[in-house]
Image 1 (tube, each protein chain N blue to C red):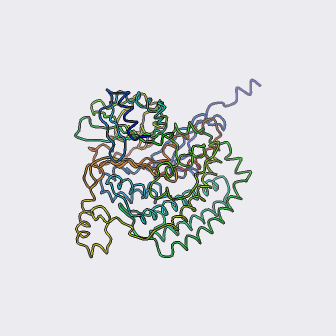
Image 2: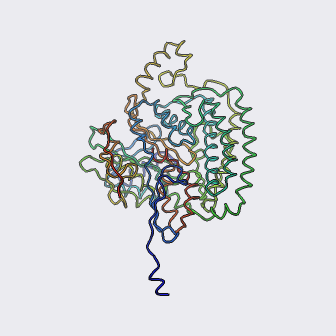
Image 3: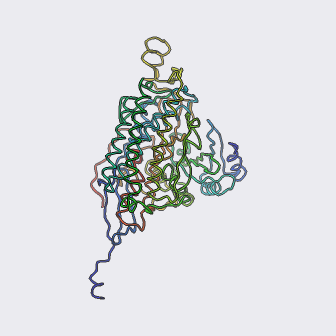
Length: 160
Length: 396
């Protein structure tokens, strides 16, 4: 399978949703509009020539000072075609939400909770969006670039 | 009869297992809703070992991340070291010398060996097979001796460097490996006899924790747990890195995806890892173990004393850090539990802008609730064993 097949098919199918693409160091990347993320993911999973059956990784990056501020990053892998692709959806600070892709890949469940925990991005439609690595009562989202490195959190007792 | 039914207590019972419980090797909490002994619902709480890995990485230089990667999967630290170093090398766009690649393969496979031995040993112990535990811990101890010869530490190896490795193989490494593997194979046979046809062991693991191949893929399973479902996905074969394409080894797969298959896959991978180490030691060429680019490698003491460019870059790389060009990459290696991915973003400075790890056991632990629904509470023990959650990696 040619490296650019995925990006070419995406550009054909969703001409208005793809903001930009690149293949830096051989990693195919598409920056997509966040409104269409579920449709694009479903297409990538179901198209016969692509068949991205693994949702390998989901995370976010905080580009403080840029607008939109956040990027949600998806790493997909196609076992039948042995091919990887990276999707990025930009999310602004004022409207810090994106649609959940749990209906497409169940493996996104905990990854989305982690991104919510660390960056405060809300995934709409997620079955149980709550903190995962940190505890209820933690203030702020530590992987945001404006979260101080040495900030202390108040001690809390057990929560019932 | 109606009177008895009225008196019977038929509510669901909610019990906590963990965070500190003998079967939860890491620190993880299960909140089980029980109907008698049957699990109606299982909630898994993780995060007790969260140390802010990514935040720490973002505050240090690129080289300072390597000791942190040791503490991800602390049973197979060399694979984490290698995965991170390969990811940074891909970001910079450099390639390491041949000898270095072979040494990394040897280091990775020794780590995988230690991880699988630990996993099977602990699984045996928790199901009452204390002898199997003792045998495999002896084997693991021997493998750790080899790792200690290689890098001076047993667990927190900190051995791989960006652009190379810390030191060359010791002189008698090949002979010592042959001795260790001879003993490991004897112990392997003993454990195989003790467990594989053991009625008590089989009754506890057979048909428990079953998952189909398609569902395992949807849950994001990788590594031995996915291969036990019959899906032959191994990063070493699918997208070979280092010199794995020159090694002759098999990828064992299971049929049903139950805990017994996961056990069998791991047992077979122990043998395959030994084969890979032996082949690598046969094929390893002579030559340098670090790239000759002082702006990216960690300088040797010899070079600092004798080469002016090394001395200059020694100061620069220690104080400012190496500076990969701005960009982002994702690189996956086959960890002991599955695909270990690194997603790195560089802004051109000496510190990582983002250093994300894709932990294989994170998604496996997420599936615990699916695997245990409708099963007995005692089945948590073997299933969680075979998931092989490592707290350091799951919680980061």
